Length: 330
Image (cartoon, rainbow, N blue to C red):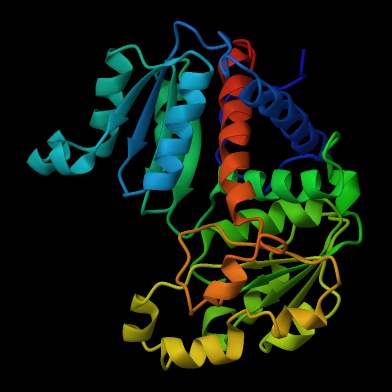
């Protein structure tokens, strides 16, 4: 039906434009399900989805759990604090335990880069047939977040037919701690694949020059780096600001949160430089008064933050559906 062939969703770096469009179109169908009376379909009935979250995350885990239940899957949630990991069990042994319970899809989040890929490889070696979805790994990638961002933006431009083509030439700015952000890395892959004019802005300590080389081969999009905020905002159609973790100050990467806000915090005044129809995104949770002003965050005419949360369920339904219904040849 869809032409989907990937057994796992681990990163976005090598995705084709067609794959992005399949996800966007499938998510649009799932959004229709969520808008209906029953809000549920039997697509994954009888399958078991296990959320293996070795790193705390309320939003992403809850979104995946709801998405799986909307597809009629059975759901198991793993909590590291009360697990056998505290008794010395390895991550792979934990995955094998859930495999033995009949898991069909594992959604994995870990603070170290590469863990979902490692588990997927090991399960493939066992011939388990289990599909793995990366829910965020270290400073590597966060595919589902970038895809929900992509879906939110493209649906803003064409609500009935979200697709990559509508982003061609649109200026998008990503502001903040690019260095440590798996969200930013995944967004770079997807937005450049869409042909967007992508601008990264942040302090030099949080936006190394090496990011200028981080782009897909033959990407139609353009990537520009800025160490001052204003050039990135000029005529921007969309602005995404990233969560700033306070430990960046203790690592001497920033002098203070106050100074960061003065230089890179978003306000109504600063957005005057953007395109008149500019919209604002943030992966959440937001540090009010740091990444953006409270007034800006609460401005329903500018902020797409709540739309992102809603989009997250539709996108994760789409991803679970695509890998959960793909044949064994995938």
